[in-house]
Image (cartoon, rainbow over all chains, first blue to last red; front, side, top):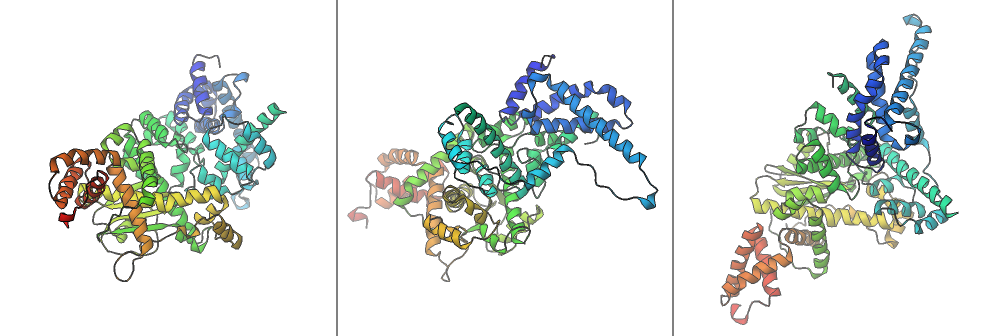
Length: 207
Length: 376
């Protein structure tokens, strides 16, 4: 991140990773004009410029949901997002071209399902996967070494070590019991995955 | 969200966060009123509405810091934001349990997960229960520790509730069950059940870890404060504490408490062994045929009223105020001393007269002033 707003974006990115509540709003509004400027040529070239703007929005949302997927060591944030959005737009244009090529008269039309974006597929998978299984002995041993975790993470990890599998229980600890079950499941899965990754890193360190 | 191109992109970002449980876009999208209440309460235009949806949701145990940060960033009244978010969460919880009870993914018996505590206009005794004093004082101290300093200094209990507990306060004129249900129905939460027209001072609904306390808007200021604090007591002692105990001791049972499914036989046994009350879903509306409260209700009313007194007139401060008054009322008959001390406490802490009298008796006793032989 060496471009002019790079330092500022780096700080915001770190805040986003740390769970700061206002960082997503600040990043979104900062990134929109920067990414759009990068894709100015593409926006002027395509038949439907809204397609580019939507892609920018969805790519930024994807980044806000999963900031850990961005690796600052491989380049700047704006370039990364612009590349992702460009890729999405080109994919969509390809799909559009293919659809037009295979268009049939109206009476022969068969309604096709929209091809799913990655995030949709992920969401579907998330709904189907079993809760992450961590051997209780490993989790318990690691728990001893995780004194730097905050109270919430310690509690979640303790539940995993105790073999708790109930999504409702994890959601209650996360204070998300009011949400629909699919969102509770998603949140519980995200937190468990995050902790599992942390445990794995710790296990590597311990071994 | 039509207009400048940036707004189109912003709308796409919001759309991309719409199914995310840890963004306000996800919370508000899942709410029965789609977040209209909080948007209206804050007076947000379209642009700032979109901004609101981009924030992360307040983290567990960090509600105060996170909501203050959002309020500052969005430049809105922080008390209104806190209250609006609590209301949204409570509406979602009630809607979810109602949907489960109707058969949309839950069990028919799950409506019992809604705790309903009616606080009627009949006079109640506020007894001194030594068993609950420590618990009550700790709760009260913790409550005020979680609110913004200015709210705590004003002892503004109505504003403080939203900061310190997952409870929304809604004031309605001439409160009764029917009006409360109508208010909920307008927000797409059509709760079934009784729709009585008996006048109430307060009414509490709690489910899925959150609640709404309705209060009669026409009550006199001190009475309204006490009623809000009293309903908070019911919420904490009769709903939050037992639910937290379930979560600690038998986490899988939270699915039963929250109405996802009925308890199986093993879980009932587990609950008994772990002394987790599956009878959590108490309906305190029930009264005995003579018009008085049944014993369990009296106990609950006692703890709730004790907390209300402690919140509004913390014991050390009430004692100091009574001590200061005691010097001026020395020599008077006991009943007059109580009356004068009660007047002082009522004025200093904005307490209803009869509650102030209860506090005055306790404080005078603690100072060694009791009814003497010639006062009988």
